[in-house]
Length: 266
Image (cartoon, rainbow, N blue to C red; front, side):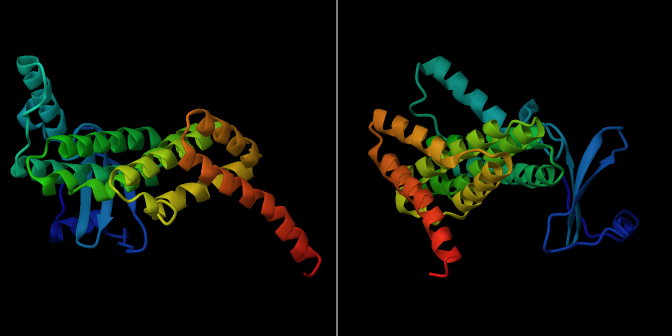
């Protein structure tokens, strides 16, 4: 994966203008015959492999630094019977963050190309990377550095699952994937001490909007789904979630009344 500002790139990007308002990507056949992904940038382009590490490297003969460090954790556990005491240095965490950025650029490009299976793969591995740094970072700053991005990665993962389901004409599975993503964002914010941020979370708002689109387009009854979720929440004694679900049900009940009032001129 590379970004270049070079006159030799002009024939490559001629007629392919950079638009700061959108993600502009395409696929090309590489010299080795494999398909590459290109993202247009203001200073040129990024070219990435479809599979493996986006820059095509194999650090420590592994698919990625994440894979190598996870192997180190497994070896440590085998020797010690526990992972207690295993740590990632600040330099190792920084290298992992840099690697996660490569995968971010790729899954963003793949989402535009509607390659949802690979988006799901890359977002899932970045969530695994967040977990690794959060659990084993030697410095508190390294354990927390990437947590601010977790809701976004969860959102993209949920959208990828929903995209795959919709391609298979399974609207119910798509809606379920979005709801699962919303639960995961809520849990993530709660665990980071920001439970109150869920209602205003931009990622949650995007997923809720997508859920409404799916429900409206495919005739899914949101009230029935909410009532089923409410019963489950009460059975599991998750009263915080149950309270939110009751509020959402009340909002659905009020919507027809508001519509009737508007129609009668009141």
